[in-house]
Image (tube, helix red, strand yellow):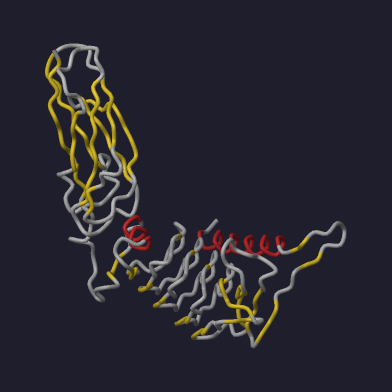
Length: 312
């Protein structure tokens, strides 16, 4: 099956599933929830399809499928518009611009799927979720401004959109992390027109490594080490990462570390190693942060620190 045929079938099945879900079963007397209309806008009110934190109207489309611009109203049916419903404006092929209401919280699955002439979008502050394929196949979409309030962006939100798509957002935000992970161009909202990441990555280091032992260390006696991470750049990691302990170059203990904000020595999250040497001699204890390089950093060479252990 051709790729386009599959996506059209997927969209059709999703819509069919949607309408099967809005049938509220009451024994043999099932009631189908009908969308409401106001001034050419289709919407569902807060009695149905409530998101976990979004109670209000969900705009489901408009009567003019050939509209070149949309100014989604702040309210419908006397309720604030809090969501753009699944596939609400999918296939609006003439759509060039959209203005969103300030109270918007969710842009749902496929909301602007295959809006081929959409070139630039500015999402409102307060938006929290961008759903699966929300802007997929928007082949001319080259710029989207995403506020820091957004906490969830689906992996497929911008699938098969323009290769020149630029996400404009704040460094350290969820949108910034999404751009990094999905290899999408990024522009700092604080420095309009300045693209790229150079100098704006975090830089993790080992802040300290130490032993708690105050006496000589002997074979078959357990020794205890502590270490913590730091970030010497102003940009936070925006996600957790992995740390590893090594003894003489051999990995012996693995752990996960919480995200570290910019310019922070994280003494509140200590990693521990308990190690029992089996024979006398000299040992090298090494602690490594982000040992698997999941975090993109300005300097990937300063992630380790070591300390010597002499066993009698």
